[in-house]
Length: 61
Image (cartoon, rainbow, N blue to C red):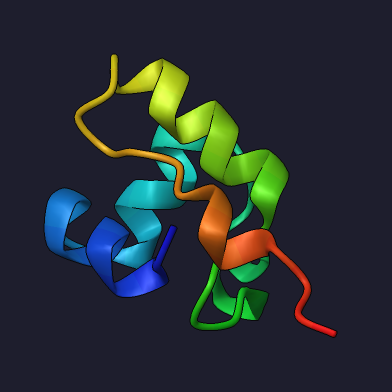
């Protein structure tokens, strides 16, 4: 899941943090692709409005 997709959906990193009940600094530390655990959690919490994409987390050889 891409961080920019979340920002587009929620409006800001602060709102993402509030939604997930985590610190805003945690969200700020995410890279372009957010941590897989959070992506799975967001998909569940948004009832699939935001989708986890396993291809983003596959390590290429």
